[in-house]
Image 1 (cartoon, one colour):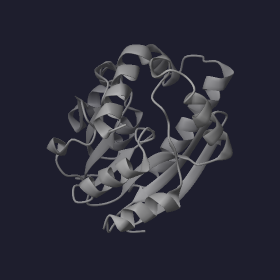
Image 2 (cartoon, helix red, strand yellow; image 1 turned 45 degrees about the vertical axis):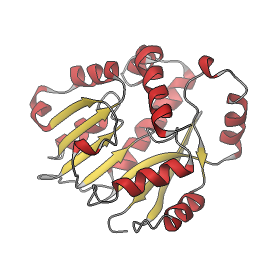
Image 3 (cartoon, helix red, strand yellow; image 1 turned 45 degrees about the horizontal axis):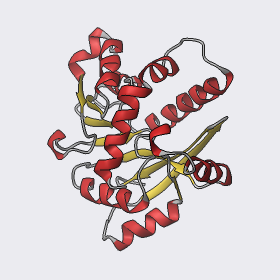
Image 4 (cartoon, one colour; image 1 turned 135 degrees about the vertical axis):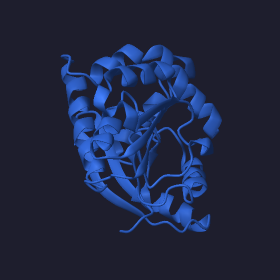
Amino acid sequence: MSYDATRDRVEHYFDRTATQTWERLTSDAPVSGIRATVRAGRDKMRAIMLAQLPDDLTGCRVLDAGCGTGAKAVALAERGADVVAVDIAPEIIKIAEARCPNHLRRRITFKAGDMMDPAHGTFDYAVAMDSMIYYDNDTLVGLLKANEGRIRGKFVFTLAPRTPLLMAMFRVGKLFPRSDRSPVMIPHNTVTLSNGLRIAGVHGRLAEVERVTSGFYISQCLRFGGRP
């Protein structure tokens, strides 16, 4: 599927089907055992990603691409960053705005729309947690190439690693009608993505940071561009 088609499908899922589930998962409310492992995995991954950026972000403009309910945006603003927090789902953005502490509101601009829209401007850093996991290798290469000049420092993002478990889940998921399932998470191999970037003439360096496995949550943190 094209970037636009996949993006629209993600919007439909999170804005119409999964809003309440996502709101509960990202809160302190009790959840089932499986969802608790996903919550723990996401909390750990968020900390890993934030550790890739400076503790003091005063004067820095940071893109939170696919900000969800706003936890990363708040953490970045607490470090002094001016954050543009974008999510494709307007209902999710409403939750993020409601959760934002009053003293940080002037530092965070929440926007509903395409996380990679050039109209958002240029940035010192960018983070994208579990918001690029639905796109194939060629699309990711195109996204990173298109945004290489817009992000001056590190672009820290996550992908689903190509593990036997995730490949099995991917194959099983393809058996179900598209209207009956969430957007397809596509497992990736870092070497394949790196080769694609090189062939496309992208100069930034792609590096693996750390993998998190927590129940059904399996995610690989990657760093692109900036200094190693």
